[in-house]
Length: 117
Image (tube, rainbow, N blue to C red; front, side, top):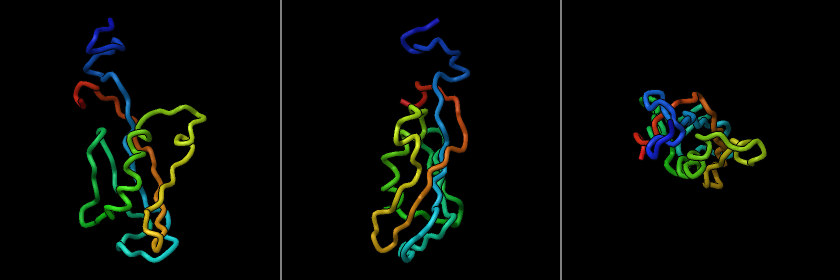
């Protein structure tokens, strides 16, 4: 039964929405690595908003900032014709570096909307 707090009528124990966990990976560096990152470096976004970087590693805040506005959309299912469903490459704003990142969906996770807002 649908209610105001559970509009889909889903069992709250099972979650009422689905989001993808993401991994953002340095795919290539076409210039010089000013920030000290290398191809294969990555961060993960899990459980909607938990940012994880492997121990002993770093991720350039400017590269992170250039991908960040798109991550909430990449966590969701999008229409097949949506450009963001088709594209997964994002670039760092440093023109000397020309660092290209790839966003990958790693896991589909069922969550409760009320736990996130």
